Image 1 (cartoon, helix red, strand yellow):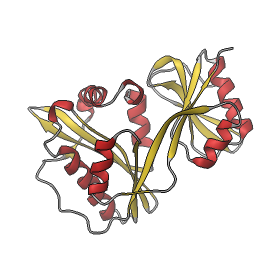
Image 2 (image 1 turned 180 degrees about the vertical axis):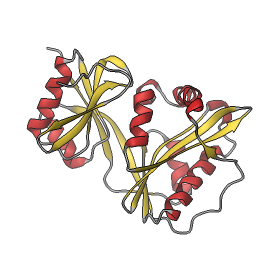
Image 3 (image 1 turned 30 degrees about the horizontal axis):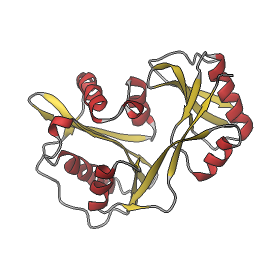
Image 4 (image 1 turned 90 degrees about the vertical axis):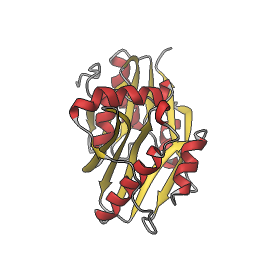
Length: 238
């Protein structure tokens, strides 16, 4: 049995040939997290949910899943918590790099980056250490970049590549630094990196209510896909 109470890292649960990540949602000791790494059967979803229930969690939240996965989870009692737009860029006609100096994010910056992340997002979407690690480890190759002002990070991105597809896993800008073009330049930096890596496209998702992020992505050539993503939730009480 894996220890799903560890807050410092999410754990990989293997169920036959199926795999998922489980642990605490953003470090919350009452809410479990279940993120598929392969397509899960209803039986595997139930098993993973039981593991979290045995760990003392009172509810479980999924990572972002597509429509087919949503059907599987809904069949074992999960309900919709959030809807996300899914957008795609085909990495053609990219803008030139912006004027913002963008550098590799360092381990010493992690605490400040997590602080700005908490300010940039509402509670439900904020990253903790494990969440940041998951974003960086979600693809075989990743890129972690930051913008620094007055010696502290004021914006950052996590981008990744898996095969010919790249992903913008995270973009955050400190509220006090918004409106200066940092989000634009960080996104362009990620797009140019993906093309240099010979990717054919980049994917990103954002909340349906996050109109500012949606406008930014669409202004840079991302297009909304007909199918979105879903975050689901299930109570483990009663």
